Image (tube, rainbow, N blue to C red; front, top):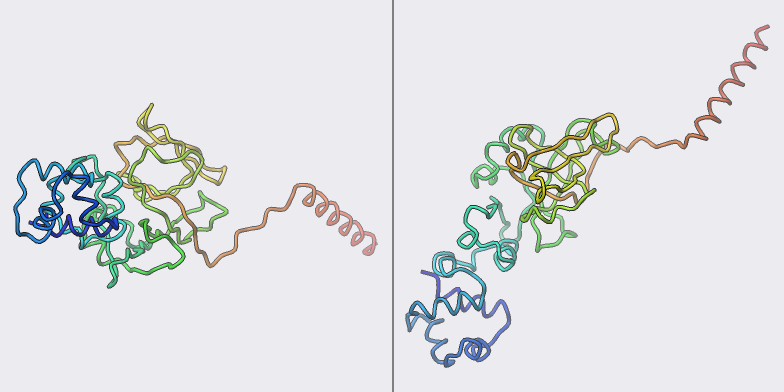
Amino acid sequence: MFFHSNIKFLRKRKKRTQDDVALKLDMKRSTLSGYENEIAQPNIPVLIAFSDYYKISIDTLIKIDLSQLSEFQMTELENGFDVYIKGNKLRVLATTVDSENNENIELVPEKAKAGYMRGFADPDFIKELPKFQMPFLSKDKKYRTFQISGDSMLPIPDKSWVTAEFVQDWEFVKDNESYIILTLDDGIVFKVVENKLIEEKKLRLHSLNPDYKSYDLPASEIKEIWKFTHYISSELPEPEIPKNNIVEKIAYLQREVEKMKLSVY
């Protein structure tokens, strides 16, 4: 039972004194100190009071050692994504942390995509993925890097490494922005998205490459959504030459061909 250590951890995390919390909960400071030091045992009304105050479920306060959670996991919890409150509506993310309890960025290479489809929620599988850190990314968010394949998102080249931020609440997926989506049948796809989840329970997916048609993805086929942050590639995208330059180049080549013909005759 972690209630005693958890309420002390949460109080210090929020930089509040025992007097601050005791006043809000309408109890004596000595009573609060007794709870934090496991001298006194809370009754049901007290548990409810702490749960309401910290906006964390009683089950979580009792069963989960909050001090062992990563910063990302704590932030998600404080934002209302509590598995004991939301039940199966919560998208539980298997993740890893470094020796200082900072979230790792797990790498999903091309050869691991098939395994990721089956093991994305399996902590043991995620633990085996390569891991690294990017110090310029926020520590309050969860990132993962996926190797994309194909040319549907050109000018982002085939085999690029796309780093993306985990999206917990799909209602916040924004139109006309790019996302990595783990799907039930197609695996990992990288697309520009229109969010139609609320009204039609689907996403409309678009490619940057105009040769690929847009299509709809039902919400029931979505497993994870990650918001595009940046990409790394060993290839430079092909430059786009303005049409008027192309016309000038063609005209120039035609003149050169004519000159060559005249020189022959």
